[in-house]
Length: 119
Image (tube, rainbow, N blue to C red):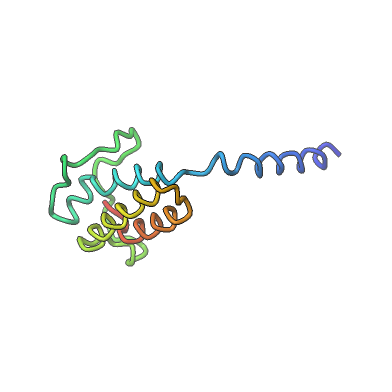
């Protein structure tokens, strides 16, 4: 009986908290921008990002990229893909400034696809 009463309450809480747990486009832009300016992106493009490569400063970061090939070959990063991702990121920033959250999130999806799995 307690479970029957608690389940609807828990579901109502999750539905109400859902938007608060969502990542904003501005946060997404910041995270992806760090990836596009990382040493891994530099390895793919052969060009140092403006301001030098950034670090994740995460204690969970790997010292070096994992060896082997990605399980999905379509996620392999390319120089052209990283450059396209940077162009799309500029568009996403404009959309975010204009308050177009949905369009910005859609563009960020394209940014991530273009960038691929950076080392």
